[in-house]
Amino acid sequence: MIARDEIRELANFHSPETCALTFYYQPSTPQDRSHRSEAILVKDILRSAQRDAEKNGKGACAKTDLERVSALVEALHGNGGQAKAVFACAGQNFWREFDLPPHLPKTQVIFNQRFHLKPLAALLREGRKTLVVLADRTKARVFKLCGGALSEEMDFFNELTRRGKSDGWGGYDAGHVERRVLNEAAQHFKLIADYLKERYEREGFDQLLIGCHDEQRPEIEPHLHTYSRQRLIGHFRIDPKTATPEQVKETALHHISRHESEEKQRLITEVVGEAHRNGNGAIGLRRVLRSLEAGEVQTLLLGSNFQAPGVKCYHCSHMDFHEAPNCAVCGKPNTRLEDIGDGIVGHAIRRNIDILWIDNNEEFDRIGRIAALLRFRADQNTPMKVAV
Image: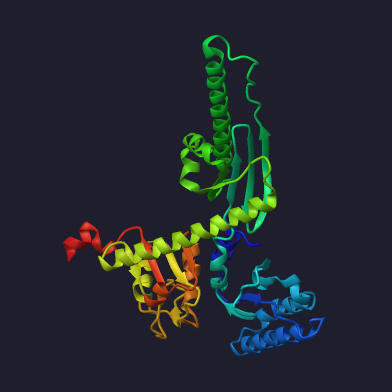
């Protein structure tokens, strides 16, 4: 699985000689058990890429990387049902390869000044770290869920004060013991909160889920530190002592999926509303490109089926959906992009803009499959208004 920091490294790579090779392998159903037919098809794609590179005068810089990819293909044999991505530039001694979920559009090879990263946009959030905390008054278990893999990080037990044989005179001892039990439980929950705070400061995490009995929920949350409360995405009912890792993973994935669906719909509604009232929302390719260039974008919303041709100037980074030979800003030659979405994704990653990948949403399709939530509107700053 590829991490977000690795994607950022790829986004920041630049080859002025247009020798940055991107190779995506999407496994298909083999026609024979040896996967030879699949290997032949991939080799044909690589040979076609070599011919195109030679036509464009880039055959020499492409040859080494394509030969290495070709050798890699020989050993794939379906790659265990996983997709594969390779990013390479022999001229800069750069080679990175990753196994990915098998959800790529197709097997393809691309040479450009930057790597082709749009297919990775959907994986940016899959790489988020979610901590799942199971807790009651005597038990605490902490799991990390990342990229579909679950691991248990911590497990401890808190021995509460036991009741005596008698409640004492007038039930005084019973009340005293109960108060002590409540105090010990509160200390137990505070210990969990302190662990989460220390864990966040040490390694960080993106989301938090709490699994507990219903009656423990109001006892746990008040002890959480601000870091943890800001990342809390929900609770679920479970027995911390008897829950199996399989149950934890299944329940957590269900809640994460529901939370993400709700978050996406909320953001779509917010962006559309902001755009319609001339606020901090941009919808459509023209408006989003302008906002990206002005540094206004906080969150980019991109449809999985968004695709549009365009151009990019690698001298000043200006992008345009009008296919002009020269940049409208600096006058340098433009590079044609079959899908300007790839340039947009790379731009967003390099500037740490959050990317939200939208699948199969009719409302989002109607507004052009691309939108952005803005941090501010440059044209609404006071000096801009005065100038107008």
